[in-house]
Every structure is written in structure tokens, then in C-alpha cells.
Amino acid sequence: MNLIYTKISPSVSDAVFVEKRNQRFCCSPFPGRPVLHAHPELELVFIQSGYGKRIIGNTVDDFDAGELVFIGKNVPHVWLNHADFYQNDPALESRHIFVYFNASQFENLFEAIEEFRRIRMLIHKSVRGIKVTGETRRLITVKLEELLTLSGMEKMLCFLNILHLMSISEHIACID
Image 1: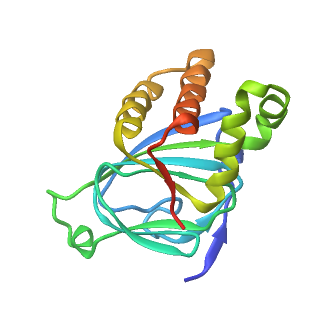
Image 2: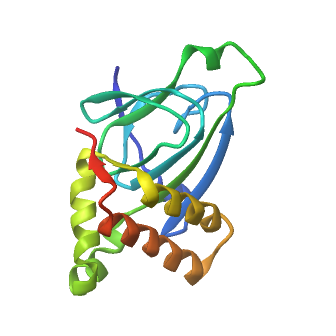
């Protein structure tokens, strides 16, 4: 499988971009073509419905509804729905919430303020991909739904709270 380098930032103007997708099958970032890709933006993905295989870095694993994963910058990744999803079964749908942000826009803030130390460490760990589970996943998925409705400073504060929750959690594990 070839790796395609993309950039999310030029196509969005927000420092934190949130998108909910309802599709027949996973096809990010090229509609109709799920491809292994990497980009400078960090990505938080919540799988609301769907199942199949995911590749993050050198690790291939199954995924299922409820999965929450945080992926670092330039980490190759792709979600591939099970073959069932490509059979035009109207009962099957792949639904996700994606959050993209470019850490370089936040570097000065994260480096200058000691209270962001744990978030800096989280971002450093994200180069291996991070799976979020347990109570932390439940709290964050509620906040992701809220994040979809917010703008401006409220959106930024909610997003920073999500990063904070992950950074202090015992319910995170590196994928590879």
C-alpha cells in the first residue's frame, strides 16, 4: 500500500477543525479511496459506528464502534471497514468524529507554560498512536459531541480540556 502525504490545514481555517462523517465506509481523506496517509496535523478519531481493520504506523489491529484514538503528526494511518460495508447494505454505516489540529500553532503556548507539561508529553507519545479507553473515553466522547456545536474560544477551551483529560488519564495506551 502506498503512503500519501496530505495536509488538512490549507483546507480549513480553524486552529481546531472538527468534522462528523456519516459514510457507507471509511474513506478519509480521499472520497471513495481509503488510502494509507499521513499529515502534519494531529488527529483524534472517535468511531461511532463501523468495524474493520486499522493501520497506525506499523500496527494493524481490528477496530469497532466506540474506539477513540489519538494519532500524532506524520504518522501513517488508515481505517478500512470490513468487506460487509462495500456490499451496499443500507443497514451498515460508518460514522466518525474527527478532530484535527496543528501542534505547531500551539508549540509556544505548550512550551512556555508548565501547566501544559502533561499535554506536551501526550503529544510526544502520540507518534505511536494512542488508544483511549474506560471512563476517559466516555468523558471525551461526550465532549466531542459538544465540540461539534461550539465555536471561538468555547471550542478552544473544550478542546484543551479534551487534551488535558487524555494527558492525566490512566486509560490510555500506545498502539505500537
